[in-house]
Image (cartoon, rainbow, N blue to C red; front, side, top):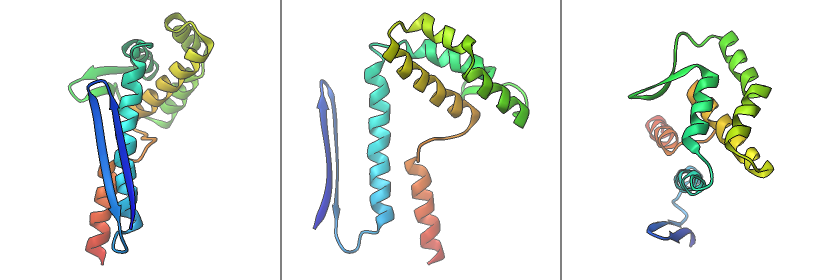
Length: 149
C-alpha cells in the first residue's frame, strides 16, 4: 500500500496530513490531497516571510497597481475590468514606478525578488486570475465527475 504523509512542527504550528493509497484510490483523489498540502504550505510560507517583509505594504502596492479598494470581500477593482484595463495593470506591474515602490520597502537584492513575486501573485489574485489549484476546485470537479459516471 502506498501512502503520503506530511508532518510539520514549527513552534506552535503543527500540521499533519496523511493519505493511504490503495487500488481503489483514484489519481484525482491523490491530487486533491496534494492540493490541500500545497494550500497549507503556501499560507505558511508567506506567514513565515512576514517577519522579514512588510506584506501589508506590498499588498497595498498590488492594490494601487490594480486601482483596487479594500472591501469586506477583500480587494476589489473599481469599475469594469476591460481587456485594456488588464493590459494597463500588467504594464504597471513591470514598471519602474512599481520597482521603486518595492525598493522603498525592501533593501536586499534577493529580498526584492521575493517581494516582486508576492506583488505579482497579489495583482493576479485581485484581477481574479488564480495561479494555483484550490482544493474546492478539485472537490467540485470530483463531484461533477461522479455525477457523470
